[in-house]
Image (cartoon, rainbow, N blue to C red; front, side, top):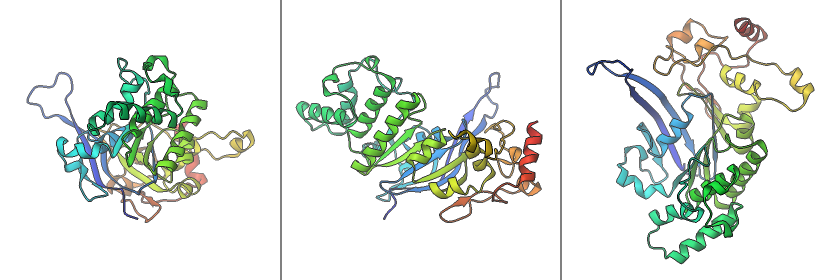
Length: 339
């Protein structure tokens, strides 16, 4: 099966000026995304996880042209999305849609639900008659669990979960091949999160969608994803099939993230080995030399400071000089640093 999207060496760098800098002073560079590679097949879900500030949302915005990026993002037809002008990109806009983090803030409060969902149709399907647009909007509202008789209501009349359903309907109305979900459930209650996740899974099966699903909650990512990519400071630390990565994490950062996921069973939770994650995320304007995770890694050596680890492995790849489960001594060392 051909790849729907093939991303190679994706980089996003922002020029930052500090307050008080002289006009001739050279701006500092903020490396938000640094050389990310991944592939996505039709109908597949790629989960993207990592701490706040690791570049997840910037990666999503780069893929749809909302952030300046270099590298290559090859679509299924062989065209490079990153090399396109805004005019050239217009023909691909209906194939790649996005669901945003804040459901209410992503909807225009002055437009009715019907107008919001119909807006992509009016842009990408201008030949449709008004009656056809209305029928498609009503059908899509039913598909995402909204009542068609709510078509003339405004966003403030809906709950957060319903607003996210509106955002999903707006993304699906033009029949895209790929939907990028940027933390779509983080602003919702837990019970509503489950409803929205199950809705996305059902729609993906019905419509054959591919998803890039960004989230902090690793339990949610495990439930919805086929493959997972772990980001840290704009770099890929580990990537692989969801079962392999969750059952046998190789990178110390992945191990720390997974050990922080709570387990409902008190006995299991008590018996688990917690891998502490010490220190703060370094500034992307001054990343550590070598392995960017070395300043927080209990396994770091001089080699980690001098040499950037390559992402090694076929199906399950890790960017670490010394991959594998942390030993008890290494975990104890990390706990000592935390103390």
